[in-house]
Image (tube, rainbow, N blue to C red):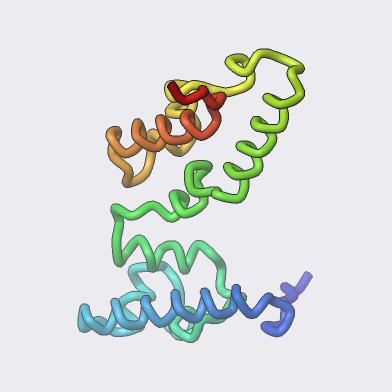
Amino acid sequence: MPKKNTPRGDYPQAVITQIELLAQNILIARKRRDETQAQWARKLGVSQPTMARIERGDPSVAMVSYVMCMWLINPSAGLAELISPLNDHASLEREISKARSRRGSNKMPAAAQVPDAGAIAKLPGLARGNASRTDNAATAAGLAALLSPKRPAK
């Protein structure tokens, strides 16, 4: 069965823009290293025409090819860190709102509703990636403070 490529116009413009920026950065990195498309294609295990498509920002190129390019540029950077639970701000805000609304309903004691900093620090993604343990602890403490019940000022 032949592969069907999604037409470029079917993707949101914001996605196309991000792929084009990624392609531009890949092109710049390759040229700064004074390497040819053929050299990078060999390193990636793709054809030279595929490398050219990557540098044009073709959204139909397999994601693994783009990720391999990013890895060639910076093997220590983690792509998954971009969408780790720690960086998913919309979900974190939703969870905070839910915790605050539950606290107001008196269904259970506030202490039982809100995870402590230690529990937050154990969330997947907090122990991995480029953040240090100190950053993770500070982030966990900050999230715990946001989620903890408000104490009256003395």
